[in-house]
Amino acid sequence: MTSRQLPLQGSGDLISVVIPAKDEADNLAILIGEILVALEAHPLEVIVVDDGSSDGTGALLAKLAGEGKPVRHVRHDRPCGQSAAVRSGVLAARGRLVVTIDGDGQNDPAYIPALVAALDGAGPSVALAAGQRLKRTDGIYKKYASRFANSLRGAILADGTRDSGCGLKAMRREVFLLLPYFDGWHRFLPALVIREGFGVVHVDVVDRPRRFGRSNYGIFDRGLRGALDLLGVWWLRKRRRKIPMVSEIGLPHG
Image 1 (cartoon, helix red, strand yellow):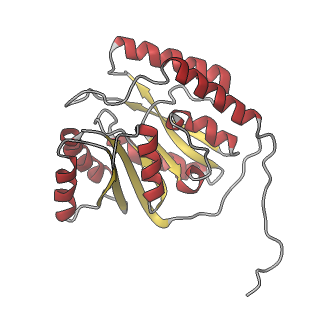
Image 2 (cartoon, one colour):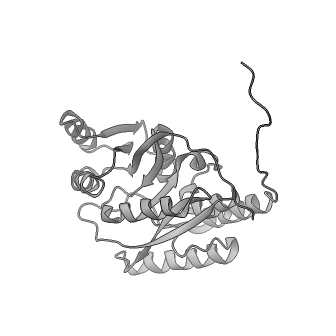
């Protein structure tokens, strides 16, 4: 598939870090500080998408914002799932580059600079730098379920990605906005980016154990729903055979 490039959009060098989170106040209290340290050399905003939390998430974010931290609170009036939370964060983002990271603290923010560097270094024809987890800390059942799902997805979609479910990703926002949305969309980003004619690079990362609470989002693409999503993405890719290089001829009037 032919690659293409888009003009850069968004606010300069600003990096928007999007954190989908439901009832993760205790983890966010640590995670946000780690993100600010990891990206202290970059202008940034941290957008926490509060997916209908009922804990102290709102109070925590108000406190951090009151202290002058570059934190924004985007709230869903009811829990809508991780895909919806990621999408709300991307739509709210002001930066040209968007980094996603899970709110449970298992993704280590120390890897964000490597993701950003990999994306910037790859040039404008590459739109996504995807984390690939090593030494998974999940339970045995979740590990094997994820391994099976990733193997099946890779065989059908041929997206060259070992671990599509890793929450750590860096992506050009203008490409994010091109992608078709559906619940479960965030787990197929490499295939959807390739469908738009852009490349994907990968960065190995190491997960950490969850500090507080339990997972609020289910096992990757479980059951019939996941199979239907996989077939749907396969269909979307098959139905996009030609990608034009678009240019405007002449000067605009006015």
